[in-house]
Length: 259
Image 1 (spheres, rainbow, N blue to C red):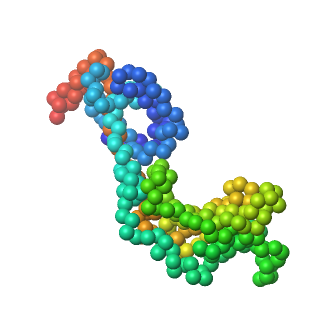
Image 2 (image 1 turned 45 degrees about the vertical axis):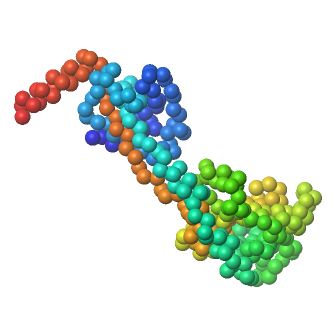
Image 3 (image 1 turned 90 degrees about the vertical axis):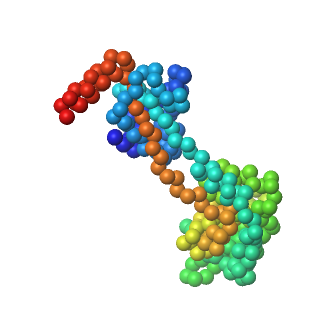
């Protein structure tokens, strides 16, 4: 049995051909996300005798194969369970301990960012241990994502790892837009992270995304990371025409006689 890993398959198998003989091209980019091992089996199949649900794959050398694709619904099941799971745990209760004067600090490039959950987000520049220049408020706490709202659940159905959002508004006036600064805080479950600011991005002028990694929210079912996908096997039989298949059977019989 020959096993070809994903990166090699991208070069060796360029197109899928459906069992009904309709050609359906698949690009390399579409193949890359698939987590599989293609098993080229030694036992061939006679052309026209492929299994009903098999598809054809063609190698760059022109050899046709009859392949069975594995089901890939495990991850979607996990996502569905997470999104529609147990809401007996209140994420606001999990966040309460850090909403009593606790603040996170991160130095990123020129700026130092200060995030006090449930209160405010600020940025400033520090030199020699002292704040130099203006302290800019990126936003004051306004609201956060409501996991009990049914219409909100659709937001995370196609996201690999959901996060909990908080919105901060009415920050320092932006010189470029004339509007108050604002920010969205996105809290991700990271089991070994503790509580920290992972990064700060200015997605639009004076509008920020603050990415937070926290271990304390990992007990909230809806924020559990989707498990790493298991490698799945795609068994493929070479497809032979009548002459090739008869020659194969002849060689098999010859080997049996030798044994």
